[in-house]
Image (cartoon, rainbow, N blue to C red; front, side, top):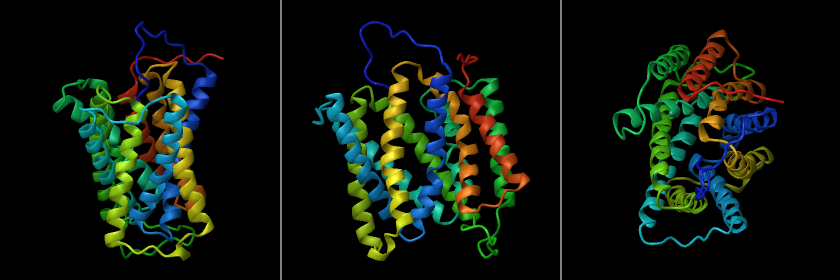
Length: 317
């Protein structure tokens, strides 16, 4: 996530202390729990409708954020196409993610979607040339790939019986769709970095959310049927969590951290995302805790750490 516009003088970065690390891990934990929340919403509501409702709330949160920040919402010449492209990428990524979650479980969903980090590395090396692969990053890619392969090898066929404690059954098709969603997310991340050269962060996120909502509504109205009975307590609570806490609180907290620290200082904590994702999947959705699942989560986490680690991060008290 990008920070605000740069000041005229170089920004003096603060060291990463225990409070910063704790707040960064809080955002990571909330993001890691998001696939489980999506699963609860998808128990009774169709996937595209869930996406539309989630980002409708996120749009309201961003409207409030932009007002607080004093950021205008009017798109100037040269800002409309970046906002539109970002919104279309959001639609493709979230739609495919929600569809994938319906055919997988939250543990698999968390690990698969977080492979976007590795797609970003590949895109920035071979396409944009913005960053180059190093031996450490390449090793991280292979470690994470090993984790993904462990998941795919152990994924059951669609007609396999579901565990008595598990609410979801992962499938190869579902995991493949989630990997596709991760790839789209990587392209969106790379494109948003480019678009931020032309559009202010808050304004860009507001418009990309709003454009995504319009596309979700059109798609859901065309292909889905939303029933009032689908708005169960668990589905509504999960929607509020996705739309307000993840899209709102996490965004605000990360923006605050990025004003005091560099993106690389904060990004290094993202290695814990798949670990929190697996943990919440096991605790909340009854995903089966197997040695293979834990090994896969550790491999993906180590891969993310190796890709993001720029230099040792000292944590003070």
